[in-house]
Image (cartoon, rainbow, N blue to C red; front, side, top):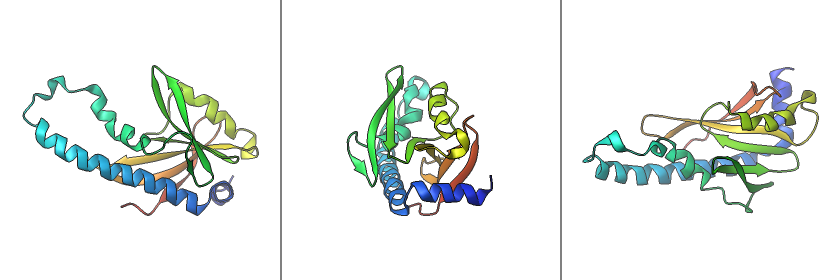
Length: 166
């Protein structure tokens, strides 16, 4: 399938307005995280980092997730809490046409297999599964955000970069 065909699929299942609303929440949560983190870093410099919480490395992700409240709507999407094991959860954005998860890295976890299956049959059935992936600089400021379309094996077959960052 051509890249244009994938682009057409994405355009048919999520509006530009919904993309903007989702990206705005991610950027807003990143800004809050960076403000709080700057204060905490100043206060924590006096302590030995040997005993730092291992969850600290994931605190940006938790901050972003906290901007998506279960049962609220973001455009055409209803936000659901998705529990994926070991007491961990994340927001799942659901519409008739698409299901979206948000993550920092390309997805590799076993629990995602059920979502990849949404995209079998040459992307003809709805809803389709996409994920939003972001990357950060050393200060944990988001520098890029993509909407990614995986195939039924979890391989990215198309990604759309959002140009509005900050």
